[in-house]
Length: 338
Length: 117
Image (cartoon, rainbow over all chains, first blue to last red; front, side):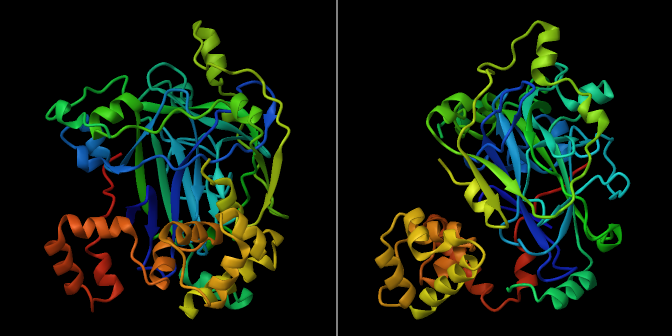
């Protein structure tokens, strides 16, 4: 089952094991420049708000209601990363993440089951976060929100259609017996502003309101190889969630809540002397990245072809202050709210 | 509240074994309190700190905020606000669920509905 607490999706599999589960939240962050430089990890600037889509069923398009799940606001051209862990941090889980039903690790169309060749999922808790599409070994391209239907999203570039948008997540827990074996072996440690009234009863029409994710700048981040093997995962038990992304104006109209402010630019943040991050996952092996994702046009490339300037403030940034993170507690540090 | 202090110290020391940033001084600094104050809390010489400080400690040490607040003998202010808004309903609900096993309580929590996609 999935519950929503403090803007985090909590996945629990009590039917598999009392400890089985994980938490997933979405962090606001800087948009790294969309150029050919490789950037370190930008900070987390706090969680994006998440709400049950059902709470606004009368105000959103029927296609959104049909998907269920949750709704999240993003500004156009805003970046985001997925943060894993919290609450149920110790139990291993396999997680598939797709944008517009395109797998963010392999670039293939969405299928529910896990595949090992090529691996199309992430392994928690080894993988502390995911910032974008896995384009090469040790490099991702940052997730950037763009309006669906304008040709920027990974979905539109790969399928030629602007059908789904948003983010899709499915989580499988480790088989209980594998977890227990592992535990014995390693003796693991223990344990608004009031706009709502004005829009009462009006259902927004679907169209430009739907947001999709598109590839942005290059960032150094490894997506780790599964050290347990496909057989470790309990594929009879899973929970999945569709995260609808609404642009900020639509979010305000639907929920009556003010969306988070626009993050600072990468240049302003860096000028203020604030830190970027690097993460070392020890000896863990990294996936090679997907060719189909590497070939995608970035937001600035698509913009240039269309004669648009979709990314303001896209100048390269000289990053000087980089904090190296190691181990599980890195999560807390990178998510510090500034 | 020795229990709270003990727990805090054990957790911090466990983290310090692999990461020096979890020394008493550095944790206190990141949480925004004096090291001497944190030391007294850990020893049980002083009462647990304010809700805001407890929440920062929970974040810093990777603890569940509600569990750490409960150990400090507190209930978070957002939960208090929920009860104050509909006191009869929530008081009845909590009393009825007092003895219920965890799995029964989980059946009344609200699930994120999965649809057709």
